[in-house]
Length: 484
Image (cartoon, rainbow, N blue to C red; front, side, top):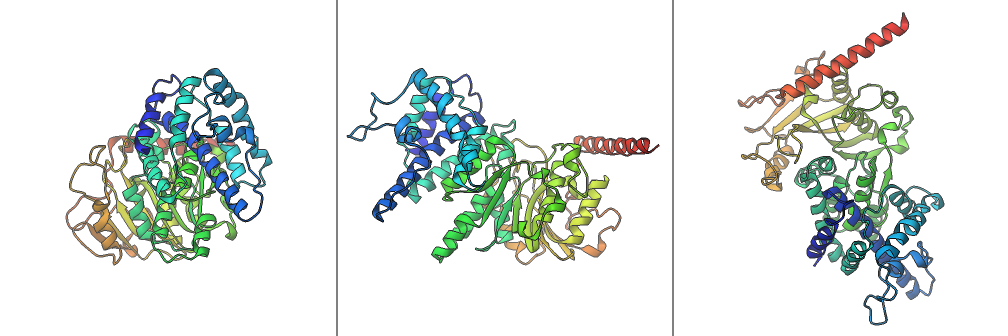
């Protein structure tokens, strides 16, 4: 039922001039799903209060509840066509009344982790792109057919929502930045092994894939007490996201996975000054795939001891700082991080090796990320003690990865198994930290069993590094001139 409903909604959205990509389809489906979910949540809470002889205070005023404007029902439980708006009446209500009303919640909210704040944030950031009120009516009717009150329904719907996010990644353009292959995330979670009670953080959470998979991992352990379940709901998963659409998707994705009020903040993580981070701000676990290749402004770079325009390098510094002593991290980064010779790369490798135990490096083949040709590695590290030995694993599924041949859980099974004991194999080997060059901290080591070095840079990557070095040189020269 859910699958057909999603297909029908996409078919209607394709008729809309304002909706041209998978990103648009997901965005428009998301805000409507969110309001449908919110209405169900409020109805459930009102019913619970009634059974206890209490009165529930609704978050959303009556005129703006789903049951009032989107799907007014008659006594027989079917849509009341006399009350249901359509055409320009519906468009005008949504654009001129509903969105401004919901956006105003941000000012009323007591704090950023409240459901009220998230409502205000979402409806201040996204826009209704369904220009035709008739198309909007058709989509609303399809959304209204969906039921996700039970865990079984939420589970099925969460899988379909994940599929929508995956399609965005496959569609290319900037959709891929919201999607990390779930088999890779699951393998990372299994290596990091979070425990109930740990605070888990992703400061570049995209559609919250890491947080959702970590939630599923902890929930699957079983034997959870009521207190444990409350801890998972409210005090375990924390994320930050800069982009509006990803923020909405993260909230919706976590809700569908079963987390009622996700602790996701809409912010540019990199604007936080590392010097201001205190012990109370830190986490036991970091899991992330930060955006790379971006360029951050000079004033943002001022927040970091190692200054660089490369977004991923700033995020890695942030993640190291955000970990508690004894905390563990799993972070995806470009494989050229292991060998780049610019000052920022060398300094960052030194920081990582000296302040953390970088125990595992997973080398991912090209094609791991759909729509992105760049090769990546995953760094696994524990904070608080220097690196003594690094275990490398060269992932080779034995086929070319791509849209029709994506990464799967089986591809990573050997890695997860061997990593537990840091076992040597034709694809894995260890490097003693004492043998690492103390001037370059180069980690681009060759597989001793005859494989190639785990960084094989393309001409474009070499050109990009030259450009970065030129930019760095120009900045140094500029500073010298300023002193003269």
